[in-house]
Length: 137
Image 1 (cartoon, rainbow, N blue to C red):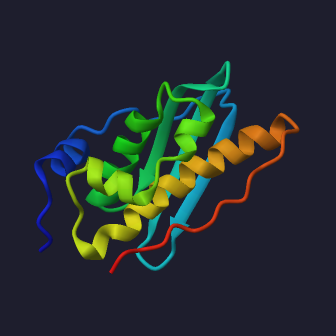
Image 2 (tube, one colour):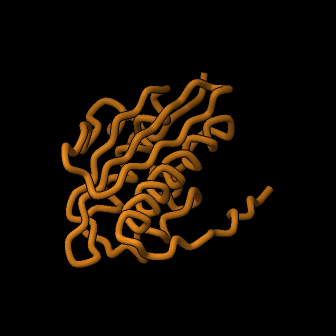
């Protein structure tokens, strides 16, 4: 049984920002068919800032905790700042994830980035391609 930090448990038991944004400016979905986790992020953008971020996640406790913390980390940030939320930062913010749950932090960051991509494409703005984050270890 993996050992989770108190922060992971808190975000799993009391997830923040759960739900949909009816008239979302961007929607991003990411999933891992192997483990069955599915995350959908909804964003609202005002003056290039994420004024609201909500999510719906089907998955394990780590996936729910990751979605919750990513929504908190992204809210209020500019699009550029939100793009800098990496899987490593997510895991660090949660005070660590068990090795077999690191993929969950990837899904959260990727789903948020897909929502930003969706928003930018709807605005007719170029969507930046991102390099995949190198993993340590």
